[in-house]
Length: 200
Image (cartoon, rainbow, N blue to C red):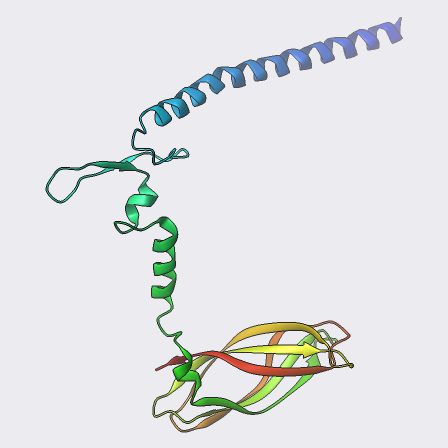
């Protein structure tokens, strides 16, 4: 008798669980037509062939003379006329890093000496190098690329690092124990080269 009561309790609990799942599915089905109707309305209002807004509200841009409206997403309206969102992003990235420039800055900067050692239980690569600046202006935030190799001379991995610090005009500076990254146990040699520098 006690076993039948327990079995009945389990069946009732399973029935309640099934009813709650059915109610949740009904609520989801009720929301599905609303979202699909909104998506179809957004597609229907897009007559210029610019594509869907992907859930973003549409923005209307008015031309210079008050004529010629265009419909697009806020992301495309944020970009300059005739440009795409990716072009605007590239312009923002280059504007955010005005100090990184061409090889003319690197032409007067060189690494005069370098060495490396392991640190941190052998997994960290610590580089010591001396920079010489022959320019009449100071430089800072030098980026180096260190290539690591095996015993047989084959390449293994490379690490890049921006080293903060100022090198005076016509001067030199030694950076000691700069952590450029983590390396594995097979690394036996390292060679670092300058990648970029910021002119002051």
